[in-house]
Structures are given as structure tokens and as C-alpha cells.
Amino acid sequence: MLEFEPGLFIWTAVSFGLLVLLLYKAALPPLLAFLAQREKMIADALAGAAETNRQAELVLAENRKQLAGVQTQAERILAEARQEGEGLKKAAVAAAERRTELIEEQAQQEIAREKEKMTLEVRRQMADLLAAAASKLLRRTVSLEEHHRLIEESLAAAEAKQK
Image (cartoon, rainbow, N blue to C red; front, top):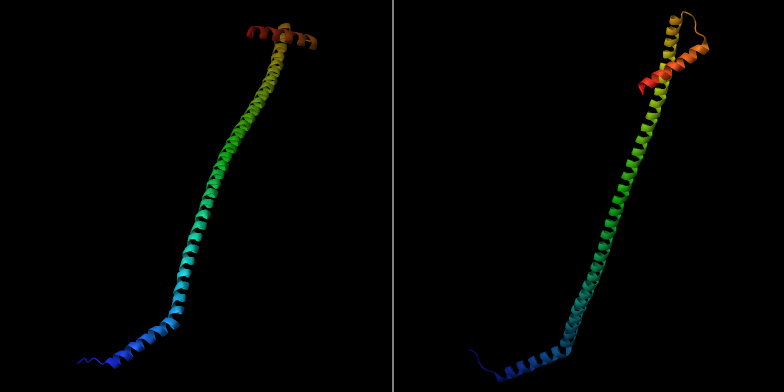
């Protein structure tokens, strides 16, 4: 079974001690340096991430300000467009009203001209009828001067009756 051998124990302890001393002198400094380097790299990465996060927050805040400015400008442009549209609408209505008034005025002038023509035509026909009636009554031909005088008298009498 197990026997205790002091020589083997001493040589095992010395070998283990030498191995620990060798590892302590040879392997431990590079291992500690690697761990320190790794720790520094992780700390730098965290600091970089924090800085990137801070910059992202600043950019986000700036973008929000710009977006608010763009929205305000868009609302202002829409308001201006509405006002301009209303102005154009009013101008179009005013132009249409002016055209309507002009057409109405022209129509009234045309009606007045036609009325004047018809009045002259009626007077002429009335003069012819009166001249023919006067010729029959007088049984003679009426001179042109008498004809005009009779017409004017008849027209004056007709106009007096209408009023």
C-alpha cells in the first residue's frame, strides 16, 4: 500500500519548489503582463464605447434640433403656400368678376345700340306710314319738307302719349 519514503518526498518537494520558482520567474511575469494588457484593452474599449455613446447622443440631439427646424420651416412654407393659393383664388375671382362686368357692359351697350336702331327704324316706318296716310287724306303728294315736319309732329305727339 502506501509507504512513506522520506527521500522520494524530499526530491518531490524540491522538484515542486524548483518548478514553482521557475514558473514564478519565467512564466508568471509574461502572464501577468498579458493579463494587465488585456485589462487595459478592456478598459480602453469601455472608455471608447462610452465616448462613442456620448458622441452618438450629441449627434442625436443635433439631429432632433435640425428635424424640429425642418418641421417648423415646412409648416411655414405650407402656410405661405396656403396664403398664396388664397391670393391666387381671390385674384382669379376678381378677374372673373371684372370679365363678367365687362361682358355685361358690352351687352348693355349692344342692347342700347340695337334699341336705337330699332327706334330709328320704327320712326322711319312710322314716317312712311304717316306720309302715305297724309297723302291719302290730302289727296295730293306731300313735299319732303312737309313730310319731315308732319313726321316730327307725329313723333312728338306719340312720345307725349307714351309718357
